[in-house]
Length: 198
Image (tube, rainbow, N blue to C red; front, side, top):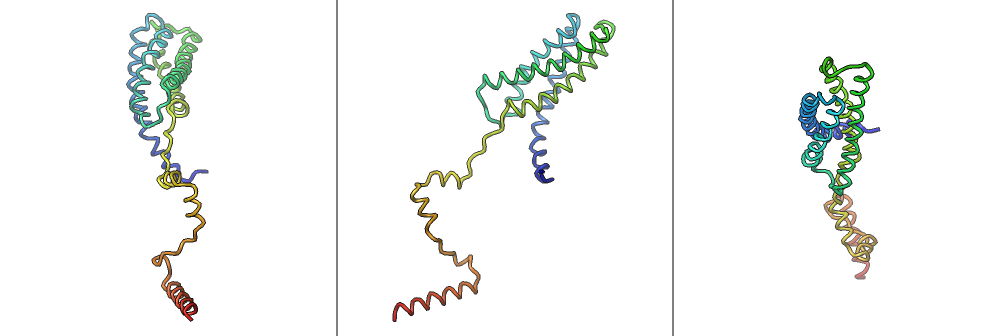
């Protein structure tokens, strides 16, 4: 179970992404609603599909170059295909909820346009939550962490030299020793030197 500090760190990392995603989403939502409203005469569901195609293209470009610019850049074809696949699922959520209300309750664009626009907003909210999760999880992948400098230095070492470093006992640094231990070590060295000179 993550600690409160880990949770706070994760949330702090999520805030910039959520902010950028929200700004792009707000702009695209306004454009989406404008397209649906202007093209309502051809049918609300058809207008919703057209609006989704237009705003999806703009959303991909904006999210790739702003929201997820720090994430790994996978092959463009793969990323673009997944992005549109998840947007297609989002469109089914948005347009499906609109179609269910329109045809389920017999609403018309001429008489019930404001109600249909309200249902469209609810569909957008549901689809946006799904898209945010899908983009973060599958489309714009997390960056691959850089190796730690120590790991990189070890990887560059000659294997035999590395083995020698591991097997050679290290003499303690005098600064690491306790003064009492240092005195004892000096006494032991002096005794050993006296014995060898005799």
